Length: 69
Image (cartoon, rainbow, N blue to C red):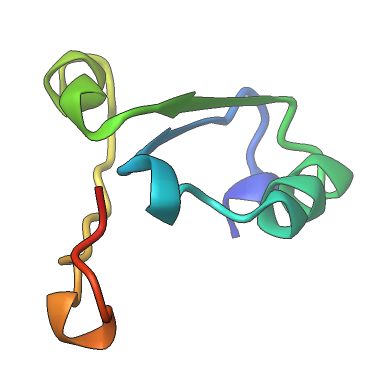
Protein backbone atom coordinates (compact mmCIF):
# COMPACT_ATOMS: atom_id res chain seq x y z
CA UNK A 1 0.00 0.00 0.00
CA UNK A 2 2.79 2.44 0.86
CA UNK A 3 4.28 1.92 -2.60
CA UNK A 4 1.39 3.96 -3.98
CA UNK A 5 3.00 7.08 -2.49
CA UNK A 6 6.20 8.75 -3.63
CA UNK A 7 9.12 9.36 -1.29
CA UNK A 8 8.29 6.51 1.08
CA UNK A 9 11.14 5.36 3.31
CA UNK A 10 10.86 2.15 5.32
CA UNK A 11 12.90 1.82 8.52
CA UNK A 12 13.07 -1.66 10.02
CA UNK A 13 13.93 -2.12 13.73
CA UNK A 14 14.37 -5.67 14.96
CA UNK A 15 16.78 -8.01 16.69
CA UNK A 16 19.27 -9.60 14.24
CA UNK A 17 17.39 -12.92 14.05
CA UNK A 18 14.07 -11.20 13.33
CA UNK A 19 15.03 -8.63 10.68
CA UNK A 20 12.80 -8.14 7.64
CA UNK A 21 13.29 -11.03 5.18
CA UNK A 22 15.22 -10.18 2.00
CA UNK A 23 12.29 -11.25 -0.18
CA UNK A 24 10.04 -8.65 1.49
CA UNK A 25 12.65 -5.94 0.91
CA UNK A 26 12.98 -7.05 -2.73
CA UNK A 27 9.20 -6.92 -3.15
CA UNK A 28 9.10 -3.37 -1.75
CA UNK A 29 11.94 -2.32 -4.05
CA UNK A 30 10.12 -3.80 -7.04
CA UNK A 31 7.02 -1.84 -6.07
CA UNK A 32 8.97 1.43 -6.08
CA UNK A 33 10.09 1.89 -2.47
CA UNK A 34 13.58 3.25 -3.10
CA UNK A 35 14.82 3.67 0.47
CA UNK A 36 14.84 0.93 3.09
CA UNK A 37 17.10 0.86 6.14
CA UNK A 38 17.68 -1.69 8.89
CA UNK A 39 18.31 -0.83 12.51
CA UNK A 40 18.84 -3.12 15.46
CA UNK A 41 16.26 -3.07 18.23
CA UNK A 42 18.27 -0.35 19.98
CA UNK A 43 17.66 1.91 16.96
CA UNK A 44 14.00 2.34 17.81
CA UNK A 45 14.69 5.44 19.89
CA UNK A 46 16.41 7.04 16.88
CA UNK A 47 13.86 5.94 14.30
CA UNK A 48 10.78 6.92 16.28
CA UNK A 49 11.94 10.55 16.28
CA UNK A 50 11.71 10.77 12.47
CA UNK A 51 8.94 8.30 11.63
CA UNK A 52 5.48 9.45 10.58
CA UNK A 53 3.97 6.01 11.23
CA UNK A 54 5.18 3.21 13.50
CA UNK A 55 3.93 -0.36 13.14
CA UNK A 56 5.03 -2.63 15.94
CA UNK A 57 4.44 -6.29 16.74
CA UNK A 58 5.52 -8.11 19.84
CA UNK A 59 8.15 -10.82 19.76
CA UNK A 60 6.30 -14.09 20.27
CA UNK A 61 8.79 -15.70 22.60
CA UNK A 62 6.64 -18.82 22.94
CA UNK A 63 7.41 -19.68 19.29
CA UNK A 64 11.18 -19.99 19.89
CA UNK A 65 13.04 -22.98 21.31
CA UNK A 66 15.67 -20.51 22.54
CA UNK A 67 15.00 -16.80 23.07
CA UNK A 68 15.98 -14.53 20.14
CA UNK A 69 19.06 -12.38 20.61
